[in-house]
Image 1 (cartoon, one colour):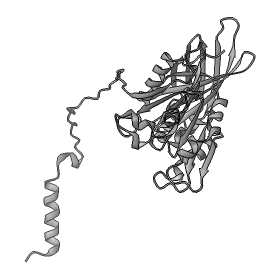
Image 2: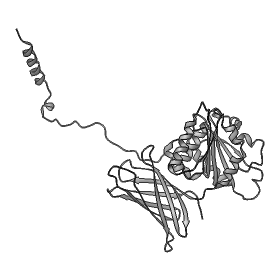
Image 3: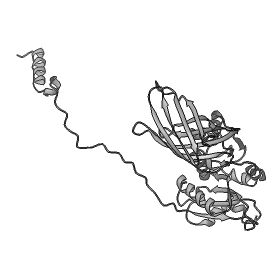
Image 4: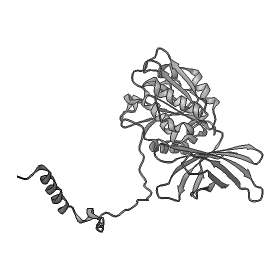
Length: 356
């Protein structure tokens, strides 16, 4: 009779006999993968199409005055292909019976739920090119879905707006570092059961943490409709007219020395003294993380160029500090960065608006 111990022993022998040679210490050559690594790097152009209402105030046709512009983004209920729906709330409702409203008003309609920032940006380009609008007095506002659109558009292209007024919306707190220098007035109902008050609160808190100073109006008894009281408030429009973009705005890209490092780069450049400039750069590193670099500039009489330099510590483990340098010549702003650990990259930008 075979003992239990003997049975276990024979089983172990059988297992060893059938163990593949590679697991016994004899390495086998790894088979060649049928898949080849490739990278797509190609500029893609898309057609932007959007219907919108355009209001031109009384006196617009007289002279060459450049008018302030309000862009209004509607809520989800006005989505579709019927522009009459857009007149339901806000400035497009108001100007139906207020011909002397002192703004050009552009009210686009989203064909489906949500706002596409790139399409909106193309719309603004077209409006500025074909109407007597002051590019330094462009104001953005929206309600509910349009409040979310306001946060998203301004967070992606902050240099385009003199002020924003998002109503009962929400956004990405990571954008706060870009939004902090934009005059912002936020509105929300304390009893909002559709978009919680917290969505606006977290954006206001993030902006303050980043160094901004947004205004925040909470209607203690209001539910989701916090827009009627807001757009009926003459102080909102007076506040808009007090805001003017006073920076030279730049748009471009940055690229690192490793594959996958790079992205869009925005810049606000201000003159802070005789031949002295300050520039604030912001860009994406990854999907959500936004970095910021502060640089000081000196204008030289020899070649009329402005040369910048700055330093930033992004908190990378063993990453070291980033040393940035750049130079403005005409409409071009180019530069590079290096780190103590040997990382390097470059940026190229074009001016978005002209300032003295």
